[in-house]
Image 1 (cartoon, rainbow, N blue to C red):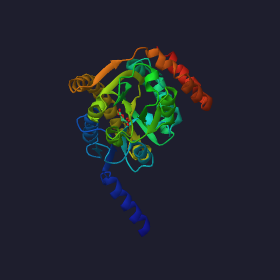
Image 2 (image 1 turned 30 degrees about the horizontal axis):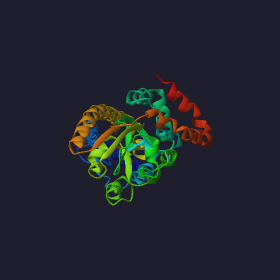
Image 3 (image 1 turned 90 degrees about the horizontal axis):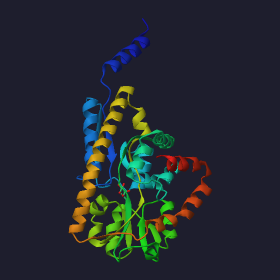
Image 4 (image 1 turned 120 degrees about the vertical axis):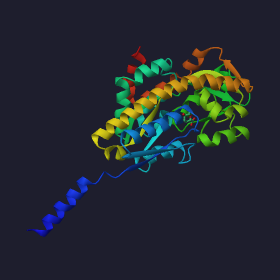
Length: 324
Ligand code: GTR
């Protein structure tokens, strides 16, 4: 008998008999534990561990302890981290197609965003992400973003003149603030509170839950409803981690992400209301702007510049605008 052959066959038999090694997944999250996204991510982790009978055990690291968002995106892409909840804002610097989601006023409202992302157009974004090492499994809400600042209510674009705003890391947002006559500073989320407090910046922009959970409302009490950005967020898995799974486990992980997104959207709607009540009670001055259309009109050059640089993305922009 061929000894070598027997040894190899024996080894193969032992490998088949052995349970697959457990995958200990590490997941990035920017928000605190009680935030809708965090609760949904915990639910995702639990459901994955249970459904795969411990073959995949995800652990979520909250509060951006694993780094700022742009770095975390790189980490998930190169397999240093396994999964995350990412906002598509900072994603635009890496996956150009996702910049379409950062065009101000691209969505009519949050329902319009759902109709786009939950259908074929959403799949086009997933495809673009997958070409860059990210598997987008489901879409979270992050409401709509408006400007807030330490100085005064913003009623019209003229009020933005000369003010310094923090934006997420994306050139489109620098252009957006420029067109309103302000100055934009891309900065990590974790640095915004201190920068508002010390006057390094005059304002920032975000949805109610983040304005609340980051405590920015304590130092920047003027929140002006411009609703200029509605940006979806993903549960994204590293392609390397995804491809290490069996087809069955992929199915279960996908289902857990879809279920988590459903819960996140429900929790999100509740949290938006709760955060609004909380910041109002704490003294924030929330105002409607005089002429919302004036803000939209000011964005013409942002669209023109973007489309001139990315003619291949024009069809995507048009398809979103044409979605009822
Ligand atoms: C939040 C979003 C985060 C992060 C943050 C920011 O609304 O959920 O992922 O993008 O805004 O402004 O940096």
